[in-house]
Image (tube, rainbow, N blue to C red):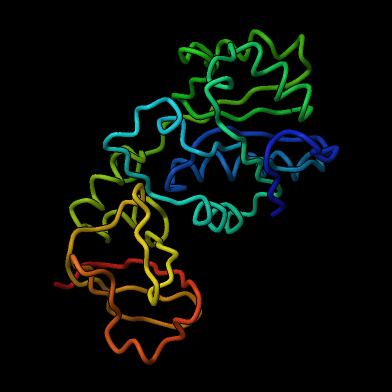
Length: 252
């Protein structure tokens, strides 16, 4: 996956299939959209593109109180690459950008900068100033602007709605096994445990002991406490650089 910062100096994409959003958690609902853009890109010899924003819009707009995210940007990159996305565009979110109308956003960025051929959105996707852009609005522009728009319906697992909000609630309760079912994989944390500095917006489970999987190194037990993060038998693991920790379940 190639990562591009901003909309300047983008390459000429081949039949770009695009989706836009925070994609916090990259849960099963997100994965339905991401799998669809990969499928369309493959069918049309195109490229799949995800556009996300940094910093988070709530931080820029002064609404960050209580904000807890499932993924840092680095973690999101890992998950999107794992799904097989071709390109990630990290768009700098500014107050000026937040004032763009829905039509300006579509014409000036998706069409002019990227050349979108197919746009795939979730069932509740809204965008633009005051969030007044939606699926019907995109449909009204597709013929004139030369793209197709596809909407993915709400995803459920065993009749349970899948959303970032639901997953956050499960992680805040320490129910990592349930969260893993909705995420489609273990909840991840990428961190340097020898010099751990907490990200103020990264959601961690409550204090306790957790069975985890260390990427490339095997199973372990991680203790989360007020003093930080500590692995049982830490000397058995290579902690000289950041590691990827996947939470399986709470064990104490």
